[in-house]
Length: 537
Ligand SMILES: Cc1cc2nc3c(=O)[nH]c(=O)nc-3n(C[C@H](O)[C@H](O)[C@H](O)COP(=O)(O)OP(=O)(O)OC[C@H]3O[C@@H](n4cnc5c(N)ncnc54)[C@H](O)[C@@H]3O)c2cc1C
Ligand code: FES
Image (cartoon, rainbow, N blue to C red; front, side):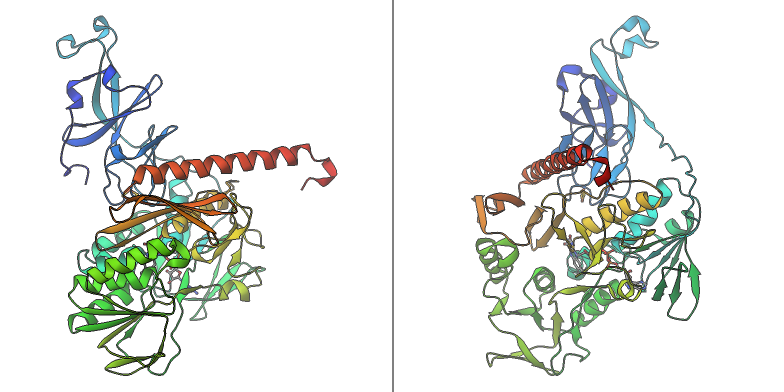
């Protein structure tokens, strides 16, 4: 991707004056046919790939934070020093190049090509493999082949763990980019292959034993084994539960007809795509993220769409009335008809009947009325479960050696002190990464600030923080101009920030929350440190 990108800015192999890269700034240029960011941090200079390895965002429009650069689109984080992707959703590193500052021509071998005071980007540097780490955790089993499970498996290898990793997934397909199932994939602009997080060869090369279509029926945490649906048992040294969430079923007459679809897996999305080929009129039941993203993707396929939901303003509870009303108008401008303040009470082959008496013609029905965390394995295994699997700040469950990550995990939010559970792709991946390091003996708190995004038509919103309950939504800027920041507060405290076309503000809000977390953590440590010994854990 980096190699094919358009080249802008100076050719950095020809040198640029040091004054063109003031301290704390990035200069976009190119080297040897690839876009490169030249970055100065104090006396240090770095040259890394300028294109995010997730969806290809321009990193020069991101934010420098310490010795990292943050991606403007979905907040991946890359090390300036090594190019490593330190935080999901990017999983691959960016390249890095050697940088040379010419201070004294006499010390150079080829003075004709060089200017004193200039900085040159030289050859590309190779990636340093991680040293193998000894681990007592022979055989790590990951239950779940989604965002969290995949990120955990990759991280275990990346951290140098060389023993057996077994990933068991009830899904028939390999770990996939689930958010795209309701967006580009359903709209028909992304292929099957581009929707996989990794190729089959990747798992083979990494010696990650991936079993698809394999459901775990039970976990025995005393004898440390998992039992598969076919009765086979697999012993583990450490276990990660990352079973995600299941769509809530619509329990109405006709709810199980073949043209009534749900959307969680790649197989679901494929089935939905094949339905769309013969469909002219769809009813989408559910006016939240998945329902509305599906509505937008079906419109891209020229299907007439009706959206049904019990709320009066879509997404009001999460994003507020102004954003909700804006999103409704956006959909209406694209031809969607809303039927709000009502629900579906029955479905037949040709129509959906609503509680308010309306009957909507439909040859396709998509249900997106929320999900439930898939906690039944954990519950039956005797782990503490409270509207999600209860984990501590290290993502360890109530049973030592058993970790949980992703949509199922309810963890202590370091910002508010409340236990929270979210259904965000990036959070699931980051939890998988943290859990993996802790399985290997690390003591890394999960303190990443929650982040999610949604895209509908050409409109996108990015959200950092977590405001399950808020009492004030303050809009700075204009939604109509698609240029604004929305701050969500409770009792005056800023809990979350959403941005529309203001990527840098979104990144700055994330950093602000991170600093608040660091302050909270250090004051907790100070309190613990000053407690009498007898009270310490
Ligand atoms: C259509 C759609 C669009 C979305 N869009 C966005 C978005 O725009 N932004 C965003 O932030 N988030 C989005 N999300 C949410 C995001 O995808 C989830 O938060 C994320 O995938 C959760 O990751 P996870 O690893 O916890 O679970 P999943 O990715 O769901 O993976 C769970 C895995 O566990 C397996 N499993 C479950 N039970 C068992 C068992 N008993 N035995 C073996 N395997 C089992 C499943 O087969 C699956 O492989 C979207 C989700 C969907 C469905
Ligand atoms: S494009 Fe960079 S994180 Fe998605």
